[in-house]
Image 1 (cartoon, each protein chain N blue to C red):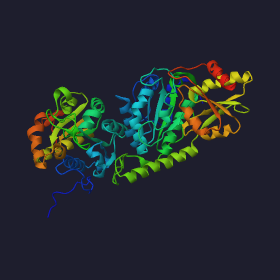
Image 2: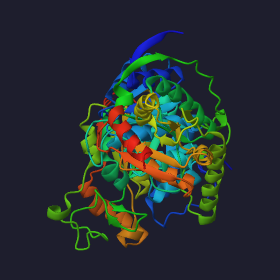
Image 3: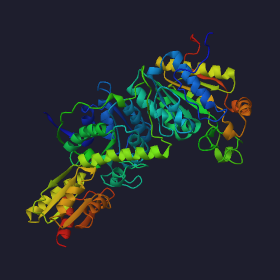
Image 4: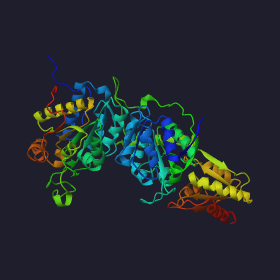
Length: 350
Length: 252
């Protein structure tokens, strides 16, 4: 296996193509342009690959809807404001039970905000994001290697559950360069019976989200919930880091967890007993490991590059079992491990 | 006795929910006739819209994928690019195609997407109860233009067929009506021709259908058919707007 130095956005595109993604539609927005550009060059070289620069993020996600229904592994990507525009399509994909991978390289918000790394879209990503009762699987990479790996996994998960999967990165995961070894993609397992390709000689089928009959619409909602419950049971992913004998545990995801590791390593060297729980799936949220950790540790510090969104999930997981502090830097600020270490020490000494 | 008329095979044996006199049911039938005549039922994929025709999949016996409001051309693009040998059509109303979905329509046309759009122009939002559409005529009353559409306040009716005809990617655009036997036959021929162009890979094709909506126009079915000729077709002239193969010999 060759190790190459590659940016997150490029690695995500390359992993998608290796995973068999053959349809990509996107629209330029910083800081994910390199992903769209990578697809423009390489998707067209892939056999049967389609790249479309769409007229908007809305059009891009709806093209993905069509391509997915027609049987392609399909993907779109954007950054925060563009992801807001995609919500209509994501809701439709979830309602139609169609697989698709959507990448969000988050930037500072709200509104147009700025183009710096941020984590302000946690609520949007983990609560469905669009209208209606639905969820999307949300994967949060904290390195370029993990971004490449999770991109491949995202296609498998979205096929397995016939549900959109979000990759929630940020401007930094997208643009930084790191060594990557691409994993081996698994063969696609997706039943032909879900693919619309013309009725042939058989019965025609339709895929739709409109269900006017309230009882049938209610049943469709519960059907989705049954699927989400399986995901909650089977797909939770997290990493623990130096939590053995810890007195205080940091909870952070994505690039923030990377910063947290740096801070924890420094503090451990100075004798502070601190560790990290890093959710890799933000939905389903790894509530159980946090609850289990609270059996032996009374104090947590949530660190996010936002004003405190995952914080709510941590509190819901703990149900008051432990103290939860918060350190947040919204708006495109990426604190240094030293800055975070200071906040950790303050919390540690309470 | 020889059977000379029957329900097209691609039209399901389901009673239409459309109002008496509505143009949707006629247009549905014309599309299905065209699909049957070209023998393409098994390779056709339709994209129904939001609006009165949202339940089109109950009638068309071809594979269908519902599009969110206005996104028909984007969804159809995704299908067609994935399955280039299928015949893909979207079925859209005036609000869907010329208001909320203008961008998707315009750019699919400009890219020359090899799809066919059946554009139902009835000058109102039908299903939501008769609000002003982008194609509502000047002076025409609607629930959101109660004194009549004003050019100053509400803008002008958009002639989408003429607009799209200016784009290089469009191959064939014709405006038809379904208010008389003669116009219905002509509309049927136009739809068939559009599908054939698509099968030849000619580019973007669109058939605009002036479609009576007696309920929201507050007319009888007969009055609405007359109104299409006397009023609507004055603002939206019937005929071929663009045909890149004009002059070539066709079977029709």
